[in-house]
Image (tube, rainbow, N blue to C red; front, side, top):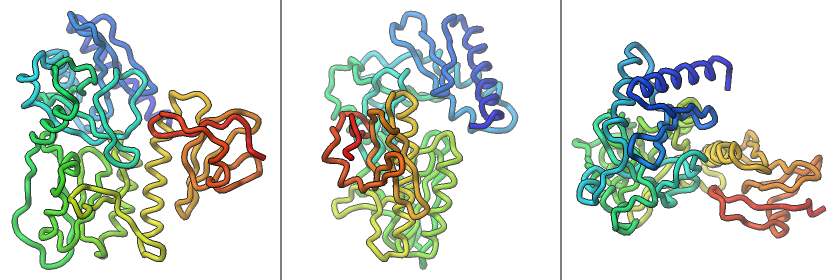
Length: 348
């Protein structure tokens, strides 16, 4: 991260903390590693964490007013609704990276796609609050997830395409378009509007791109999705997704020799590298994951040290490089998310 970006982040955090202190909050603190401000609302034993990446993404004039609205939303809604009846109509599902920041209380989540998890939020007019695993509503997690999905609009498009085209859904803060990928059958239902089997990209929270499989648009969208994913503070995934035979959203597959083979492999590698890097910020012994030009991945095992290795195509130890399949039998899997493997000594 460059100096100017660090300064911009710190300046925005200072504005948020000043707004909180004007409202009487005395313990607000900035955590630069997770780009968040943490404080404890009056009468609430659980700290609230304000993630600031969305605010930073909103450029232009009027930032002070946006900060006031953002913080005001949390002050008006300092925690989760007290009862299930109050919470149920406000729930929404969101698709996010699987790595949970160290300073966020355990959120309710479940695996959704490779390196991505489904979380649930309470949708307020000015902000949203992640639902904690210990929400206290007296209902099972499955019921919470089901209610959140049921509250999505499941909007459909009108008209039909006479040739393959690109449809872009831009989120105004209320539509949760990227979350629609969690609804079984929704993506497949866009076939008539994009002119073929729908392929979707959700590079960041405010944008969902859909085109037809095999169209001339597809290679460009792989590149566009990667650029948006790497540039956005609200990134989700650079990968492409389709519906399987049951209507469930799954990663797009490209067989050997396909014109999209390298595109798919690189998108998978970019997502893995970023999620593993986020995890490594709070994990001692975490080994680095590198990406080759053709999308192959390589885990770097520091010499003469134990390591927590990310899944990769190959592993490098000093000048020695071996395929993952040769090294994995000597490793111990861990329960970490994303999954890592513990290695005590190089099996040389």
